[in-house]
Length: 95
Length: 258
Image (cartoon, rainbow over all chains, first blue to last red; front, side, top):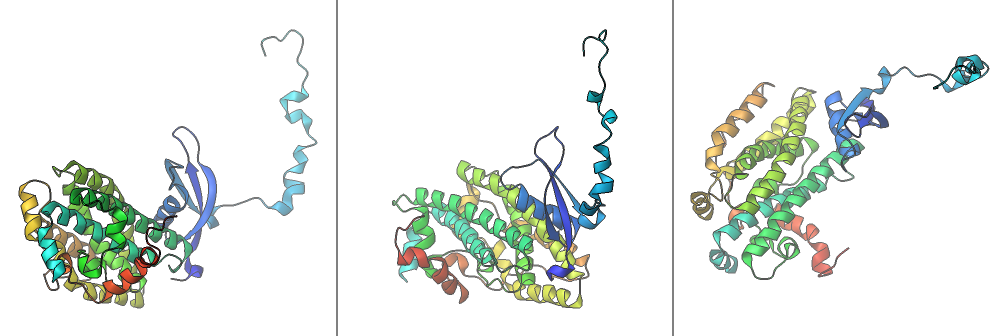
């Protein structure tokens, strides 16, 4: 089986119970089951995790770097969206 | 001749543990031959990982064999300074790695065997053997979990992949019977609760293998004893070549460490 026939999977590892899964990298595999096993061999050999998710990369819809001006920047000039924008009235205590 | 005389003086426990150690180190070396040669990186890492599992298993068995022998030899002496006729691995382990299909079929047949074998060996009355088996069975369960989908996928993949699986099974079928062969020293240890009866595992193994392959429409007959000799140091022509590579460093630079 050649590399071109393989799908790319993104690997997410949960390092401890109670924590959330973190993206750690990606790999090639011919099925989700194989991807899970390869992830085990590539990413948690030294007990780095207790749980693995693999997601075929094509199933991820991602924001684009090029869009950053319209996609992310507009948030910067809307300070009123941040709590710090508001002045606390004097008679509010305990915050 | 000398080897035969010498082996008769060895204790049953030594011969038994040494056989298991040799099985592991030889298979480990065959798997390690894929390192940097596997079809792609991820599979390369996975196969090398399994090779490492087996080298770990070999080390534990060799250390124990050396201790049982009590002649001051080390695990390295046993692995790297014995000749082909002194190796007592079952022949299936030493066959050349072949193509990827052959390697996976052999692994599948062995994983299924070790799954049955180690599951019982954990109850050995010999505490060291039981402890090694307890560690190894976890690895083997994972190995089998990995080889099953490979065999399924290749059997039901393309005409080419299926033909390679069928060919590998054909090439291996004469070597599986030896896995269930009891030597007299092993039988004596079964009576003491130290070893387990390999022969008794065969019906379960046959049933499992035939059932699994049958789902992909591949027939495989009951294991039959065809070629034997490994436990008595009689090997295929392949082991000598393999050892010349495996032992090269220790033979050329005795005692070398890194």
